[in-house]
Image (cartoon, rainbow, N blue to C red; front, side, top):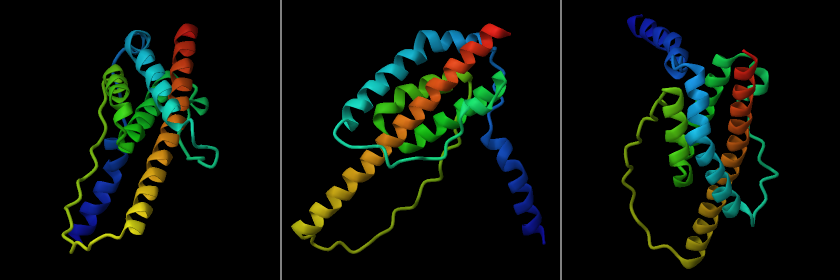
Length: 170
């Protein structure tokens, strides 16, 4: 019974721990965007576009939060936080500076994923065919991550544009 109560309590607190209630003034978030984030956003988009140029991202349609459904400033910041954490979880080195910059601008951090313990497996000698297959899978995984990063970048840009337009109207 106590274990059940603890589990239910943890489930109730989980959404609170995953959200970001940034107390940073929205004007500061906007200014930080204009000075730092916009540059990193543009550079990251350019780098990833160059890498993905040879492949197609048309098949990928991830369900991401968007700012179009968030009419107020705090929900836009919350959506930005969510998108940034998704970007960070992709583990792409091309997005590190952008992620850090956005998290600094909204004064939030992402919840770290728990690390997996390494599994010890008996190593077999790989054949060249299996090695090629593994490399193809690795390249496909990397391309999928890059494509997802492109979608997240578009959503983040939309959020910052909305944040700037909301700030002008308030």
